[in-house]
Length: 66
Image (cartoon, rainbow, N blue to C red; front, top):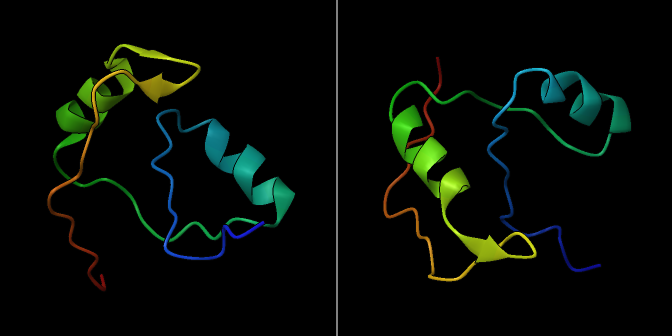
């Protein structure tokens, strides 16, 4: 409920792409072209129940047409 806003996911494992596509509820619209080390750092942030103990923010993102 109430998740149809501007929510997006960055998938860390290429194998998960097919799984997401099979649910037919997620639109796959891009790839990380630079800054993957930042994505990995966010994924490695300590937390509880998948929620970081310190807020993690993306301060800039660019979505471009190929």
